[in-house]
Image (cartoon, rainbow, N blue to C red; front, side, top):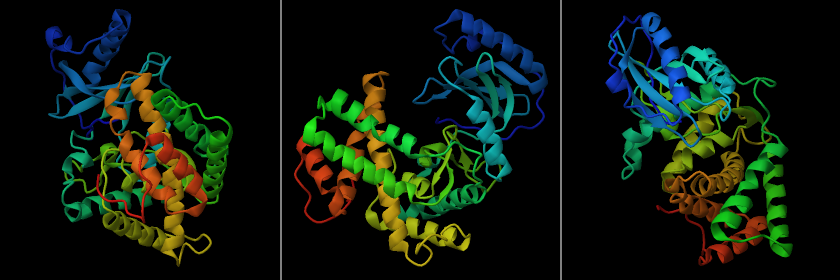
Length: 375
């Protein structure tokens, strides 16, 4: 999700104005009636000015987010998540887990589980993405270090058996999105015979390499659009869109942060921030695995293999969002992920057949040497 939120205080009561409230559209009148009743019952105790209700944002799922002012001069966020399409229980559980880890995550103030309505504290309306200067990488250094500090803090709280495992079945299921949606549905390519074998071998190797890494809590979409700028004197970035968190490879979230879905950095900046993450994680005892503690290169290779899995998955998801869900803006960013995929494949000899096949499908010229460059 991409919304904004802030910390609650003690609110007071405000009057309502139905004409403004109606500016939030509803496809289902019955659901609107359920929502209006729920919100009106909360308004006195939460001090909600229900006439101020407006759209805050929507995300790639069936959830949407509304903002409503409160009598303390602040605001709250309302999540509208139809229970037949979205399971909100992980959001509630993981929000509490993040808060207990000391992270700046939204507080769940009320949850109508049956109808899928939730009232949350509001972490503001400025994402880390909105504060980034894409033309001057070094100007964003402090911001990325705040994100690194947040990530290390999250990983230090890790315990097995709390979150679902990022296991072989899930990794393979995510990888299958690329041939099923990006290739078959978007490119019109049905893999058969030798082509299918190339992908099967590459996917098996990707999963094997990633499962070899030590496990921690994985946010699974840790990137500037899901991090909120500090609010009200807080020095911490806020964290959103965590409902799909799992327990899996420590290499995932740093790969997600530095190989962004909507922003591409030069390799020097990617390496700089990743090295600083590695140094902080090493001091925190998170790099005590094989030679990772002493060899950044060994860790970075794991990050690249993990990133490759994510890039293939996201390219498939973006195709599905466009072709199945009617959200064309996502597929417009797919070339960024093809660039990531090709760049990583070009670094590793065992991924050569996959690179050659993707080049054939994409009609691209094989790379000479290695460079990420700027898109």
